[in-house]
Image (cartoon, rainbow, N blue to C red):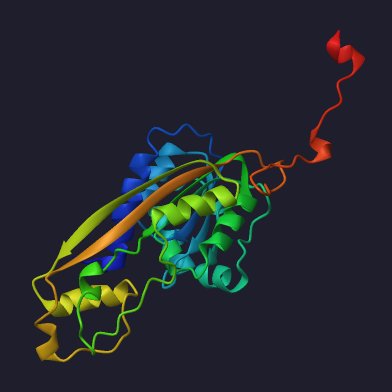
Length: 266
């Protein structure tokens, strides 16, 4: 495998996300990809939305030049109208460098498990999405690496995902952030290993452990497989003119209420 395990998984999950979008009807002029990375999904997005502009928040370790080259090789027509910024900038500011109501589709592949509070991400997606826009996303759920958590090995210093949300947590958060018609889904992927050091390398790549190496004698008790829980979801930005609901009641801005005139009723 020439790709790293994280690159392979991002590519694989992006492909599955796009398959789930096959039945979605959406007029797309502007796309936000976060995190943005070179992958086969770029060609699929190009074919599906040939006139769309793309805005990317690039993954750590991926340079703007790498993204430029990946899109140029795919003949991405909106290449010179596109914009990229580093994921580190978003992490520090909590903001996308985009105006309100400027995006039709947010495509987020395997990011949310690495954010301290995904609600801030949802708020930003709501802000930049246009009325009727769509957010589609995937992330690793809390059952990821469950085989390792049942072991009692002092040298194995595991850590939880930064955001261990299951799909029910996410569904509740989408509702509280005013997204509509959310659809959540989940599946388990199992990776098999012939050597324990390969397993540990992938566990480290998924940010599931500290970087402390294990003794050879300890590695012999490691499981030969690793489970990944992948959560998928999408939700719509509908009713953006409504004020945020309180106590399950939506409050409408008075400016949104039109007065019926005599000529209207004629």
